[in-house]
Structures are given as C-alpha cells and as structure tokens.
Length: 129
Image (cartoon, rainbow, N blue to C red; front, side, top):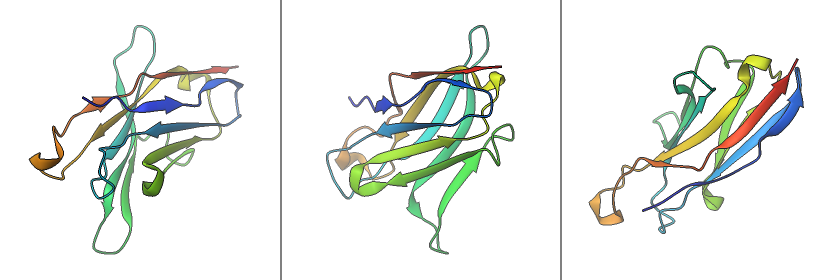
C-alpha cells in the first residue's frame, strides 16, 4: 500500500559524495518505519547496504547496521518528524555503482496496516573511476 519516495543519487567521480533520501510515512506520526537500504548492480544480486531502527534501544541510541563494504564510508540517519531516512555516502568507489533501493517496514501492530516491506522506486548511483 505504501511506496517510499526516494530522492538523491546521480553521478560522481571516485572519492566523491552523495546523499540519498527515503521518505516513508505510515500516516501516523507515532508509527515509524524501520528502514533498510539495498543496492543492485547489473547482473548482480541485490545486497544489503545499511539499516536503521525506528526506535531507540535501552541506551537511548537508535541501532544502525552497515555492510562491511560501506562501513566507515556511509552513514545512515533519520528525521522521524519528516519520516525521512538519509544515507550519506562518502569516499565513493566505482564498485558502489548500482541502483539503490530503500525498504520500509513497521512493527507498530496490525491496527496501523500491513507491516510491509514496502520498496522505494530506486535511484541510480554511478561512480566513475
């Protein structure tokens, strides 16, 4: 029922930076989506890039996860007031070239509708040597 709206992407030379955005709203300010980023290059399988939880853990921090190949280069963050998640991509490499997709799901309960996953339309990231 929900398709997250993505923005950002584009072409950049190796070593450059891009920021991707993913807006996903459940229609309820108190139901926030968990967001994951995936990417898929031509002829390759879709692979996990990063994720961020909808709520903070007991220590007050929102859990984030990164694939090894982006750790230290990419940063995921979110602004729940805007229902938007950002993926800041730094030190980009040619092998980062892919179509990037965000995936949204929630754990709010059935009252708030299907839990997903709901996929964004994708945005192309191209990194030249």
